[in-house]
Amino acid sequence: MDLYRIILVDDEEEVRQSIIRKINWTEAGFQVVGDAENGEDAMEKVEALEPDLILTDIRMPYMDGLTLAEKVRQKYPSIKIVIFSGYDDFEYARTAMHLRALDYILKPIDLDAMNRILTNAVSHCRQFHHDKRLMATQLLRNMAVQEAAGPEGIVLNELD
Image 1 (cartoon, one colour):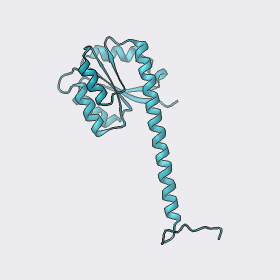
Image 2 (cartoon, helix red, strand yellow):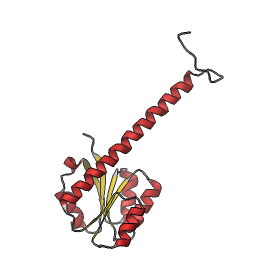
Image 3 (cartoon, one colour):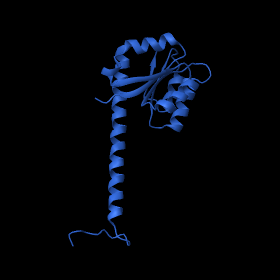
Image 4 (cartoon, one colour):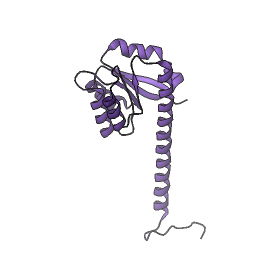
């Protein structure tokens, strides 16, 4: 079973560790490859660890979760993002959806809801990787056809 890579971002160490402990990541289809205490730290880890999913809080010092999501979306559009917050604020949720976050969940995090979100995230990650393999296969086929083509672009048939 392929495990997708996840980074957890929250300015509270206790919250990060609690989430890491309470979720059966392997069963959910993920491997926690890193955690960060703010968006700046998270961006460095994203570049180094290349996660499939980022689970981030909104309110953090230095760089908040929405700014992190925006920067990740610009630089790494294939990375999925789930945002969580202790604030039941419609504007936060609306901004998260505008940034194409997979979901927005309120703290304290309900484990059943989080497991549903992670199941959805696995589906998105699986689809992305499937599409990526299909594109690579098509590219290789196109290259093989071009290589088999003669100087005028006519495909040479070895059976002739």
